Image (cartoon, rainbow, N blue to C red; front, side):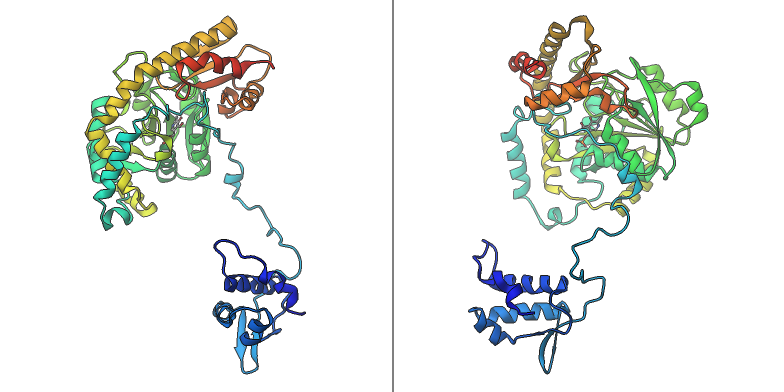
Length: 478
Ligand SMILES: Cc1ncc(COP(=O)(O)O)c(C=O)c1O
């Protein structure tokens, strides 16, 4: 086959980062891999090729040498030939085929869609006010950390996190959330999601049972499913997760995942009685306490709800928290606090499985915590979020009247509106998104379809004065 057929585009204009030699290399490799240049086919010498295509000989030499080094060409006394490729490498002339069987594992294929996307738009739940964050102070803290950088901070970081940050988190948690721990018990993770994934894989075996709240934070459910755990949906009422006696007897869990300070998404607070019951009955399993947004306690301003962990610090509780709601979600810094007796084992497992990073950001964050900037930011945002919640409540009441029950709101950054009959929540959510507002369908947080018809509305990214207009936009009939 004449070489011209494969090298037609050799002298076409080059892309901004492309060289002639790379173009030649790519065209020849593609022709060989596709089988159009057959094994044994002889290629012209580099001098000849350079003359034929009006290019520098060095370019041709480079391309040939690279293809020789990779085994696509062979050189012998007679010149340069196409090498014999193993069958698996050459696709022949047929189009690329999908290899037999599915691309993903059965577990990955069965994951329900996680609820996310467009999460910087008004009413997207779980997002703080990204415009009100003290960017200047934060960028100064980052700059300072970068100015002090050494090889150690840009190599792999300590897998459990920078010691300074672990200390600062331990102090912050004991002052604000009643968590009893030392810095050795704190492990830093790139997001609560990663910490939950680690809990599922390090603390349970495939096939073990995990109890999840129903409805549940979908990404937590997915972490458990991806680890091969058997999920059991446990109903939630006004006092949080409500397992009955039959459930304790029928499927004692290895893990229980709860959001006790502010159930996600319904917003209930787990009662003290139920907290103690879980602690008393968890036995040889683990309780995973996801405390993702309790810093904004609107029911008792200035006093975040104490954690279950603090009730009995030596109980098998993994306390998980995140800076996504206090700083910004893209930071990807979160933590888990483990019991003192589990530090060695969990520390080793974390070291064996993960590589640490973000040491510079972690140092900056440690100073942000130690210097009180974060606490000041929380204090200044709390009344702002409270006001937004009350405006949103009033607007929803005005629009839906008694037909639309409003749930939650004791803490955090979102409310739930139970919809009166009629349109399904997914239709509301789709229509609102077309108008640039994100309201999440409550039904999509349930493991079984038809769990609840309602909407989850976040007010982190909606200023009070905009809320009436946004509600009108989200629910307009046009
Ligand atoms: C209940 C709950 N846990 C954890 C997280 C995630 O935290 P991170 O951003 O640190 O992964 C969220 C995020 O919205 C959440 O709603």
